[in-house]
Amino acid sequence: MSLIKVHDKQFTPYLSEASIQEKIKELAANINRDYAGKKPLFIAILNGSFMFASDLFKHLTIDAEICFIKLASYKGTKSSGQVITAIGLDTDIAGRDVIIVEDIIDTGKTLNEFLPQIHNQQPSSLKIAVLLHKPEATVMPVHIDYCCFAIPNKFVVGYGLDYDGLGRNLKEIYQLHEEKA
Ligand code: IMP
Ligand code: MG
Image (cartoon, rainbow, N blue to C red; front, side, top):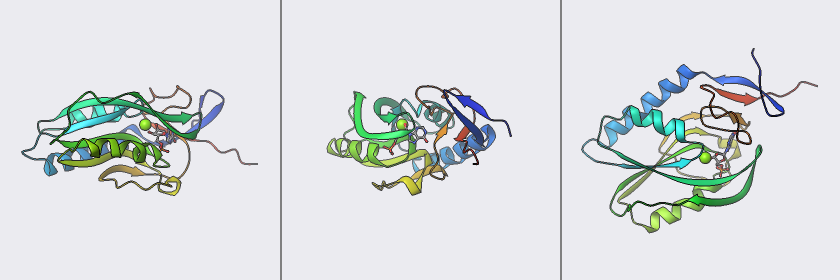
C-alpha cells in the first residue's frame, strides 16, 4: 500500500484512474441515451468538479453546452456549513434542460442552497450528476440522477478534490489514512 502525504495528512489509494474513467464513460452513455435529440446545458460547480466535468463532457455524443459557477463551503477536512457564491451564473437557463455537475455530495448543504436559485430561473428540466456521494454524511438529502460512486463517510482527495487547496492534480482518488492505535 503506497501512502501519499498532502499537507500534514496521509492518504491511501481508494479509486483507481481506470475505475473512475470506466464509471464516467457509463454515466456519459446514460446521458447520451436520456438526452438524445436534446441540447442540455451542463452547469459545473467549481472548483472540485473541473476534472469530472471535463472527462464527462469528452464522452458526450449529443449536442451539449457547458458553463461554470463557483460555490465554496469547505475549510480543511470539514464543511463550514456556509455556502458562498464566488462566481455566479452568467447564462440564461430558462426553458433549458439543465444538468448540474458536482464533484461530491457530502452533507448536501451546497446543493440545497443552490438548487432553489436554479429552479427560480425556470429550466424546463433539472438533473444532478455527481462523481461521488457520501450517503452516511448527507443531512440535507438531494435527489441524485447520475452518480459514479457511493462512498463511505471518509475524507477523500484527488481527481479535482482537494485538502486545503492541494491534491486536485492526482489522477486517482485517495482516502484519509486512519492510524491504528
Ligand atoms: P456538501 O455541501 O457538504 O454536500 O459539500 C459539498 C462540497 O464540499 C463538495 O462540492 C466538495 O467541494 C467539498 N467536499 C465534501 N466532501 C469532501 C471530501 O471528502 N474531500 C474534498 N472535498 C469535499
Ligand atoms: Mg464541490
